[in-house]
Image (cartoon, rainbow, N blue to C red; front, side):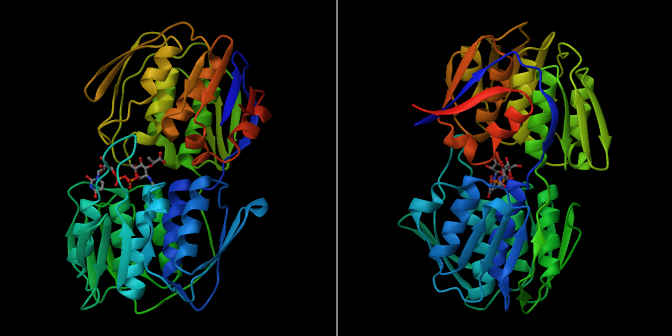
Length: 421
Ligand code: EPZ
């Protein structure tokens, strides 16, 4: 089992280039199933285990996928799809596998996908996905751990209201509606930048989607979508993670290829904590000015403070001057980093959806583990400032969502290495 060995105390400085967004590339790869007549070339594809997982799923459908890691490209030939079943042993590894449901129903009228199951941060139901797809005419049955969907009368446009602006449900419905007959209106959709990226890609393929990124999306169904090339947007959560690293280590880091428009709440909160943040068209410069000040954060759907940045920001608050309140409103169990941070000396009290973080003047290195992707990132951030050596286990969680984390941190001056125990 591999682990990370980190010696804290180094100030980070220099430039780090942000890779393509995990949460944009996964729905876009699912959407390649809609593309006929050509081979799709996706650019700025990050080197992540989750990209390998969804590529494996497409291959089980008989779709040809080639991942050119060195050049950050992925080639998908979905001119023919031979199979409509996604098996448990792959789907259980990654919930986003469920995003192939919408495209398969739109393209072939049939999909049989293993129930994704929960994960560390919550039960993560799919009721909103199913409700939206049924509104478009899908007939869904659940049995033996599989969801079996058909479209006996094809997909027809519908008026859909999402009780919660679910990112995945919005994406599945958008992909299905892009080839449904007539108009679909999605009210209260997710407004994340990754939704806009998916809509842009679908429109390049010949879809007719308006309003992505707002609270109403209108879709006129198309008869056929043509495979087109596309470049994925940069990963705002990876960018935010390196911003926190610069702030915590009192460093001076330029985050190249970051889109500050996508990070407004994180930038605002860093400035409130006394961190210098300078934005320009090509990226964001972050300078840590001594010990950060305590601030309160509350996660919300976009454009609110992103839940995917909650654990990383909490890591910074564990060494801030003062006491902070961290409220997680999106997932029911997303404080998995707390126990590990406590082992490093953090003083955190959990009260339901809120954690009270009493800033300490130092953390101490020890053996800890990653429990999920963003909790793992938070532990690495804490280790960068902790006294002594920290060993982080279960780093496969981190490999799912961070492209070349060790190399990027080493290039900024961190003392971190990957060892095989
Ligand atoms: C996406 O997950 C992201 N993953 C998550 O990023 C992110 O945390 C989340 O959106 C919120 O921004 C990808 O894009 C691959 P949701 P998703 O559906 O789509 C409830 C990371 O670290 N819900 O918006 O699964 C659900 O239980 C990952 O990169 C329902 O109740 O998130 C949760 O409480 C983690 N019924 C809330 O909505 C449904 O049918 C948000 O879930 C669907 C969701």
